[in-house]
Each structure stands twice: as structure tokens, then as C-alpha cells.
Length: 200
Image 1 (tube, one colour):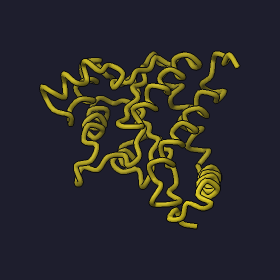
Image 2: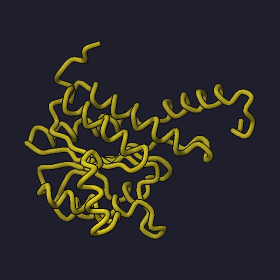
Image 3: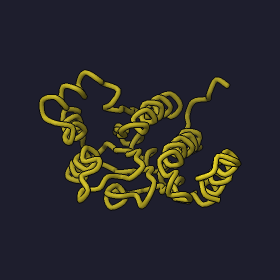
Image 4: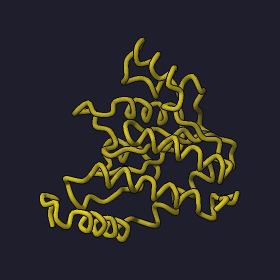
């Protein structure tokens, strides 16, 4: 069923969500949990990067990784003054790369990209993510990604990628961003990572 008709849209969306759940690769999620646990256990930090709706998800994920898993995690988009100063002075494309440089990102650390498309250098989409990933590669960080579509640039650089399957090209963004939340909540609940109980 396509999304062109409003009748039955909600059921279609929910059925598509169930299909995505069934198609997600659980072994990749397990591998990501283990990889982030390794970053934590070697004294590294996790830098969570996202733009748009994924930036909101990055903030929420940072909270969960810190509170539930004792992972020292940060999202550069949480620091609006620095983000806007860097955008104003040097340009949007370099904001994450320069923020990571200022944070002295190193081989103990990890970066987690939350993105619908994962970045595309040829189309000049999400160049800030691409710059951050290039720096992460240069400095030997562990790279993780929860992405939609074909994973884009993130998929070519990541050590572990969780790809949210495309089940409806018209709904790539809402499904990808929704399942970023499903996957990170699975990660912070994973026995390999979770150290602290939730209140409820």
C-alpha cells in the first residue's frame, strides 16, 4: 500500500514499522553495543552527531548513554552558542570536525552518527558529518552509525553500522529517525552496556 491515500495511512505506517523491526540486523546492534562498551571501558568518550531531527535524537541518546550506561557522551549540537559561533565564523560544513578537534578527540574515543542519509560528498549533503568522520578516521576513533537509505558516507567509514531498511521511499525520514530511537534504546538497555536501572 502506498502512502498517497489518507484512508488507512496510520495502519500502513504501523505495518511498515513492524516490517522494519523484522528486517533490522540484530547482530549489528549487538556488535555496536559491544563496540560502545569497549570505548567506555578503555576510558574513551562517545561523540553523538546528528542534524535536524537527528540532532534532537542525539541529545536524548547522550542522556541515556550517560545515565544508564556510564558512557561519557556528548552531542555538539547541545552547545548552541559554540555551534552558532562556529557556523557564523567558519561555516556549517566544519562545525563538528572543529568541535571534535577542540575536544581533543583521540583513538580512545568513539563517534556515533545518527542520520537519515549518512552524508553524501558528491551531493554536498551533511558535509559537517563527512568532515567529522574524516577526522575520526585520521585520529583512529571507533565509528558507529544508525542510518537510513543506503547509509551514505557513514556506511563507508563506520566500524559498525545499523541500517534502517527503506520500506517506503516517501517515508524514509520519519522511519529512519524513529528507528534511531528504537536502536539506541535497545543499546542502552543491552546487558553489555547497561549498568544503571531506569526509574520506571
